[in-house]
Amino acid sequence: MFKRAARRDSRIWVVVADRAKARIFSAEWEGLTGFRELETLVHPQGAMHARDVEADTHGRNRAPDGHRYTTEPAGDFRHRTADAFANRIVERIDQGRQAGEFGRLVIAAPPLMLGRLRMELSTVLKDLLVADFDQELTGLGEKEILARVRSRLEAVAEV
Image (cartoon, rainbow, N blue to C red; front, side, top):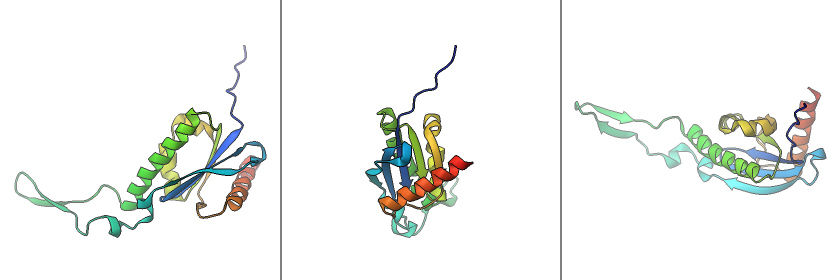
């Protein structure tokens, strides 16, 4: 008896993200036809500098034995904002998967954000991932993003 592979939806989602903005595009898998932007997610804290958000000094506390110490936030500001936004982006991607909006996924993001997104992806989403690459594309136009994604997918297909 042969096992049939799960049929993949013919739609692909392309997610381009940085710490402040994520753009979700949809297209048909074959030739990336009908490439269009579906949604933009915004994370204003990702565009800010730590000095604009965090206090000038760290909190001060006193231990039960009377010694004083300062508290520092866990991780640096860039990583904390990337973590928070990556979680939100992956939640949205998973909602799309559960609704059957796509069967393949491509992610493009700068190295820090790409790493955070990879860590957040579930096994199911990783199985749908066709390609991911570390490029900052959020500020580009739709046609330029499409050209870069096509180029990247062609390079992956040749390997």
